[in-house]
Length: 319
Image (cartoon, rainbow, N blue to C red; front, side, top):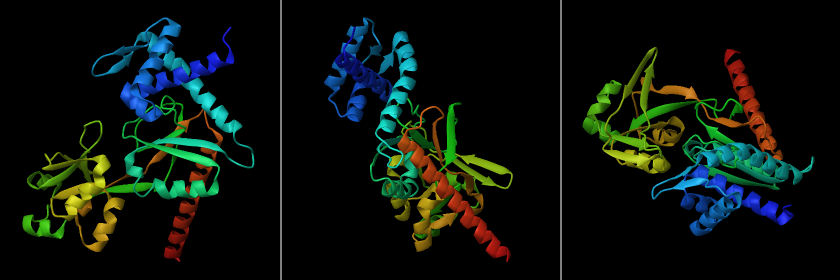
C-alpha cells in the first residue's frame, strides 16, 4: 500500500504531466513551474516508469500524448482542479478569504480593463494572492490549473458559465496620424485601405487580427498586406508607430482614445467602426474556490453599479 509520501509524490508528478500537455512542451512547462527542463523530463520519466506505460510521444519539435496519456489527462484534470479548489477553500474561513486566484486572460484586457478590477479585489481581500496568465489562445482553464479565464466571444465549453467583466460593449476603431492623412488622403471606404500603409496586429497563433467594418446592414472585410505587422503583445508599440505616421491602425477604441483626444491621431472611417460585446469572465460550473467566488461577486457588483449609473444618466437626459 502506498504511503503518504508516495501519494504526494504522485500528485506532483501528475501535475507536471498536465502542465506539459497544456503548454505543449517541456521547456514551456518548466518556465511555468519554475523548474529546469531536465527536472520536468525526469519527473515525466519517473511517472511513466511507475505506471509502466509511455504517456508522451517526444519529437524534436513537439510533445503529444499517447492514447493512454490522453485518457489519463482527461480523467485526472477535473480531479486535480477539484483538489486545488478544496485546498484553497480549506485555507479560507467564512470571514476571511485566503488562497490563490489564478486566471488565464487575453492580453486585450491587460491594458485598461482588468488592472483596476484586480486592484480593487486585492484591496478588498488582502489575504488572497493573484496570478494572471496572459495567453491569446482559448485554453482549457481546468487543464491549465486556472480558476477562470477572460476572453472575447469565443465558443466556450458547455459546462462553463460566463459573466460580463469590464465594459459591456466595445468598438474597434481605425486611426492615423494627421501628417500621414495629409500626405496620403483619408480613405472613404474600407476597400480604400488596400492602397494605404497599414499597421496590422498578429495573434500568437500566427493569424492576423481581422479587419471587419460595419455600417448599418453592410459588413466589409479587408485584408491589406500590412507593411508593418506587430504581435498583439506589442500593441502599444504599434500605436506608437501610427502616431509617428507609419500608417493606419485598427484596434480597440479605448486604447486609441487618449491619442484621438490629444490630436496625435485622427479617426479614420468613423462610420464603419464595429461594436461588439465586451469581455467575459468564464469558469467551470463545478469548481469555484473561495477566492474565485469572491472575485465573481465583485465583478457582478461592479456590473450592477455600472448599469445603475447608466440608467440614472438616461433618466437625467429624459428629465
